[in-house]
Image (cartoon, rainbow, N blue to C red; front, side, top):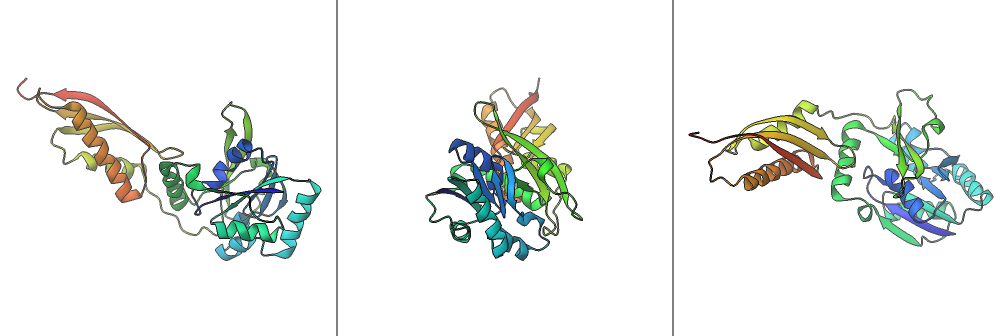
Length: 270
């Protein structure tokens, strides 16, 4: 058995990246939050995301229950799995999972920041904190939906660099995720406007578009009042830096791209 482990804090996108990593390293099986996923299908276990309390979810994820662990061990043996990827919030957690399932020592550790950029991780954390959404790397049709208060929706198909489909994800809002923070789109746009409010050359900010999923991106148009001698690229760079800093300081989101269009330029005295 060759054992791989992807570890990183909760909400940083491990489940989202699991299928791509498994495809890259030719790993047929994944252990994620109590589930054994084999060739993109759940074949054993129960997801920790179905639990009603955080403590129960943690116990499920580390195979604290012996009957749960035994069922997954048996399925690993029956399918003659030789390579497997474990997901956990820390090296200690994945080591504990490997021990509970009798997989032996872990051969390869992969930290989440080795496979996701800082901006991708911060965007994933923002989604987790505000929407309480979790990802399960199995198809939508395999997710049990008869749970009170659970919100389940289809995620997306995962493609390889060659554009072949290598699996699907499903988005789940677990019962144990009590409380939500909602930041309206109007507030997100207002932050951009406020970022530019003390830049003398900027007269207005319009046509704001925001996308905070995957790689967070914003785009907007600005009007400028500037003399003929003004350095327009330098003004645009200042605007971009102000917006970037505002999102970092207020939302802890690192914007991947900031697209700025100068829609109108007014020159005093003309």
